[in-house]
Image 1 (cartoon, each protein chain N blue to C red):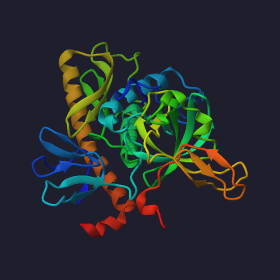
Image 2: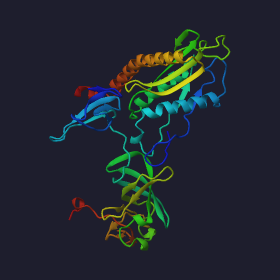
Image 3: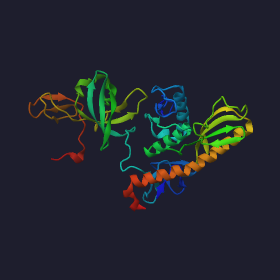
Length: 194
Length: 190
């Protein structure tokens, strides 16, 4: 996140994000491609509303993501991880960001698809063939990011978004447990004050 | 009590939001994952804050007195490195600028920068602005208590202040011009 006019935070340079060459089935180049740039933009848009930017004037918060193994739903996983990393770093946030993705193929919908199950345009289904990634702020119950690919019928699309939101809420408890454990580990000396 | 990010702590009637919290719709929420600390302020509403690190991030804010070291001078301004915010040392230095017109409160047009500061001087200054994206923190020394506290003479010895605008080297007895900070009464020993 960069700096715009005084006391208001504007969009900064896109978040560097990379797929390691060994992460995907087909070996990728080290140089950022279009997919990484697109994901960087989505991540910045999804993470920005969660952070208390007004508490960091004249500051730039940079988040770097490196995918080590890509077996589908990387954007959703990256969003969740980035938000946990920000919380662990002590950056003040209004709420966590949890990501969840869904693959729709005809009448079948799969939460958190693997790489083989992920959306490909060359699928046999003509209608309701797509993938969806949702970034949710669980406590505030607000969506900060939504990416949809493919062709959807209106009703299916709405149901898919609801399914993703439920998925995010389920993931939220795991995220909180993880942070609580890290707090206990990091600040053991304050435990006695309880 | 441990807090999670986004957890509702209490209503704004029972406390005021402090560090690591934010208020919304009449309630106080935690913005950090840590321990909730309640500080009672002698009868007033207690301040609720969330503590995570033993030493929180410290940034220079407007109106705060900082200790800095002069890195370069120029007829128009002085460039400094901010070393301490109040009495806390910073882990990394920030850059600051003292413009010519902010060195002194009186006779601003007759200021000669090289007669006020030299590179290497330790200066007490006050932050007047955080600056914008490209610039440094803007500082001022236009008060009696602000200005040079430690300076070395051309002979290399630490100088002793003799007036608000002069310092003297104890070895060579040479006087040099500086914008000297007035020593606080509690530090004067007769």
